[in-house]
Amino acid sequence: MQIDIITCLPKLLESPFSDSILKRAQQKGLVKVNVHDLRDYSTNKQKSVDDYAFGGGAGMVMMIEPIDRCISSLKGKNTYDEIIYMSPDGELLTQSVANQLSLKKNLIMLCGHYKGVDERIREHLITKEVSIGDFVISGGELAAAVLADSIIRLLPGVLSDETSALSDSFQDGLIAPPVYSRPAEYKGWRVPEVLLSGHESRIREWRSIQSLERTQKRRPYLLKGNEN
Image (cartoon, rainbow, N blue to C red; front, side, top):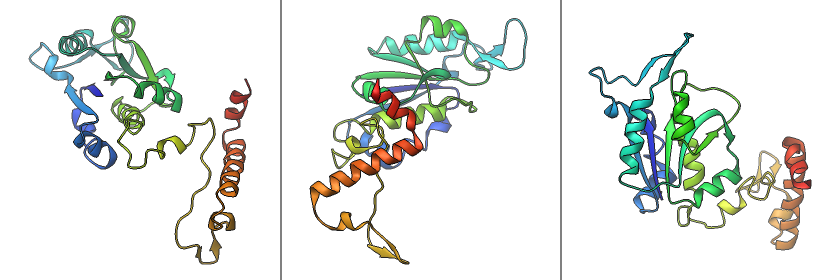
């Protein structure tokens, strides 16, 4: 898979892809992540990528020309399954969305900034919009890193245990059950006996019940969705 991220603040994306799972995935050749500085595609001397909004109002707007030039350049070298705009009013990122995108081959992610991007970009260049939640952050860079992480960890060979991603929260529409490790007792706090029993069917049943109860308590709307 190849992920190309377009941003006017590329340094914000250095850390997320230079450590841990995302770094190892790139070293293994399982994914290639390219970060493109939008200012390299500006045609003015100041290398600016934003301007005042028509009609007035507070905040600057990311201009259409540098973004179009960047996307056109990338498309001239590669074929992309989706051109994604990280937007607070886009489709909410869920495990299902991450699963679907992990099956794609090449993706572009556009990071918004300032007051947003010229609407014509969304109308004519973007194929999908994704939001990481109903809130606003300073720019789309952190959101793009979150989306990329949720996708890359699903790629075959990225995680050392292939079943690990399959047992994550939300993969089966439920929250994952609690997990424990050594020691079995600490300050009088004990690990549930069933997990120490070695009885696989009982452990599976316990985890299933815990997952259901935790979902009912913390994300009851997920259960309603499963009923439909």
